[in-house]
Image (cartoon, rainbow over all chains, first blue to last red; front, top):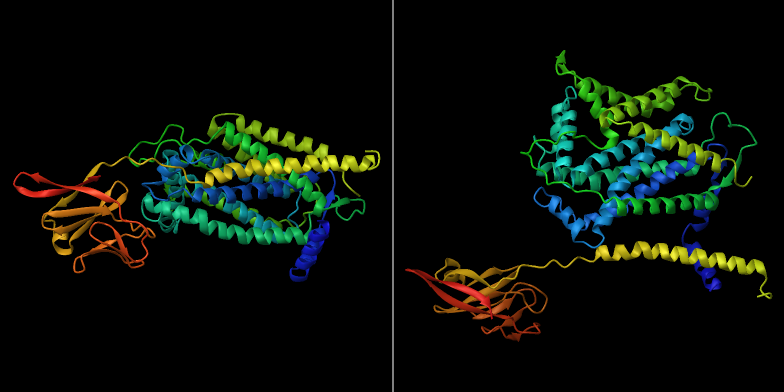
Length: 384
Length: 154
């Protein structure tokens, strides 16, 4: 049996670049130090992304993207298709988890200053991927065509409409017309299942190829020291990744089974918005900021546009960080780290304000504690 | 047991645990997946009879037939003579195409693979393996208007 396997491998090796791929995979090493646990966050984001692709394709087999049928088809998936409730619940839970882990990945890479040369392209594609994930979340939210989705889309696209000069065009571009309706649904569906996946595939390809080629970044304070130990990415680190992914799959299945995602009521353009209506948690801080802005305009620009432009500007700055941070090897507290902490604090504070609850603050603290424990638990071990 | 040595036994035990765990994981994913991919059976409301229009419906007069919905299935209603209407399942028994009535040749014909049925629905030429299912037809008088063709399951 073993002999046959070897012969098959040899046969394939003569025809495929197996040796090259193997060398590529083994070439990369992962540094082992106090904060090695952060190296798992990108892989975890990737895992949930893959889950999204798989469950998304499954949902496409039954979903019907039209205002007349969308809600009913999701209802059909939830009630009639075998395990449809499970597939949809996993898709909804994993959608939130992929953004959660992307945020963690982004934050840890930012504070570890892993964006510094020569990894600027990895950072830029990573930031763009994060924005693509947000677009996935926003477009996917509408597809069940329920009340919550309908109003979230109305508000979200209306916000785009207040961008100076291009706002009106942008609003019609997003909605596929003047109003949120069946045309918007078709358009969001197209973005969600074709355009965004194409963009994400391209960005992810560059991102992962760069990571594989350049290896993991070592924190500035350890850089250049010979004493930094490392382990092979393949198979040592990948097996640890795999362990985490199996754990994540278990957690995901438990969440989906114990807390299946609700469907709500079918969208009705002539029903009033619910009380306490709010978007998905990752948009709440922006939504809450907009509530603080009074009506009115200055020099033809509505007040509402100011925070929107500000958020856009911050997004642009985030992408440009590797080019702005001239001395990334500086020790704490660097201006960039302080700015990052302030931005994080603002987002968490506004999210807590949006929910009228301390839960978002506790969630951030709990995440920090779990990462801290994992850091102690996993740091510094591994092969020399 | 002593002959194989303890390290080999331990290795094999671990391999066995690993293999069964991986197998269980795969089964745990594959079972819901296969069930999900199998389309559920959706019960259809039972249809007992449908109206296929008046005997002087322009379609009957011009082409000699109409295709009407009987529940979710198409039924062909043929005007064989002014007072003789016949109805059959319009789905060819060969490969699921929809048949038509050809007035000139007085036959039911399937264009997909040249299947031919006579006016009793019997497969007389070409590939169809079975006759078309026959439906019952009643001409129901409607006051002073032309009678209506009513198709029902026989």
